[in-house]
Amino acid sequence: MNKIIFFGGKGGVGKTTCSSSYALYEAKRGLKTLLVSTDPAHSTSDIFEKTINDTVTSIYPNLDAIEISGEKESKKYMDSVRVSLKQIVSPIIVQEINKQIDAASISPGTEEAALFDKMIEIIIEKNDEYDKIIFDTAPTGHTLRLLSLPELLGAWLDSLIQKRSKSVNLMSMALKGQKASEKELEKDEVIKVLKRRYDKVLSAKKIMMDDRQLSFIFVINAEKLPIDETVKAINILEKYNIFVSGIIVNKILPDNMKDEFWLSKKEQEQKYLKIIAKTFKEKRIFTLPLLKEDMKADNLEIIADKFAVKI
Amino acid sequence: MDKEKAKEFIDNLRLFFQGVTDFNRKSRALLIKEAHDEMDDFILLCFGDLLGIPIPTTYYSLELLPLIAEDLDGWQNRMISRLYIWQEKWSDYGFDA
Image 1: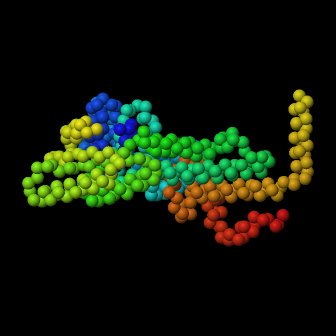
Image 2: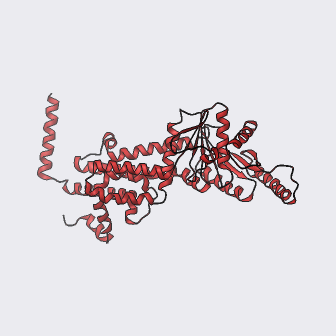
Image 3: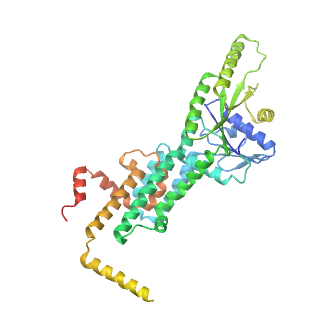
């Protein structure tokens, strides 16, 4: 398994269970592990029955966790923009412009963008501090959008840098009779800001598309809808060059069924397991059993031990 | 030393003739206009949503806001009063000068 691992899948299949217990397994193995929840509806704190917030908290020996919130991150970012506005621009304009910031804070995509920024920050800054960084992501659609952001942003930033450079060049040609030098372009504040952002996105892209650094694991159940959705999601991810390395089939029913209802359920499960084996034949497939009780802190270890046997 | 003096002299000579004749006035005005147009496009890509065009990357353009805030008002007016594209293009050729 790689250093950075994303757990994704349809809502309710057990992403949090799998990512939390896998993080626990790595921590018990003695690896310093960070568990990051990016789901707006956080549940890692519920499953561990500990308070986890947007700062790194230790919840177990060797295991730290953080729940990142797009709302809080975007607020932080906008406040920082407001502060720098006050320093640079006249008060009358600031008042005008504040409207623009307020509008942006409710525009679609803002929280995702903030979440993505924080994710990049964690991947880049915590890379040396931890042996494993595990992401518990939001349901598929949200995560796909999140992971496709670098592609979109890269192209957008690139065209902005081109446009700004062209404008600076034209201005310099008009006033000095020659194009702006490389140094002058670098000194331009707008280009500086854009370049900084661009470099960040690029380094995130590099890590995300490197199948020796990042693994993506899909959690599914042996049912029709999760399988179908995962096939589609894998196609999209691979279009963005993010390689999906494994599938966890969660909530497998026990063998000794007696009741007629459960017998037919089990039969259906066997059918879907065959389909799963065929559909995802290039991926590693793990299975995890359905437990008697629902997921709580003490049950996590049971699942964690299962990982120890299988991986 | 001589070399520097000569360079200074040539520079001054160039500036003198430029000032006297100013053949470049027209081209310079064109270049400046082009530069401004390019910047208008730039702002459109960043803050198009001020005109009602949804831009998915608005969040990221916010950090540019302090740097181009001064231009934003003028830009918005220019964009809104951009009624006749023909008229605008016509004036690009500047038959008046």
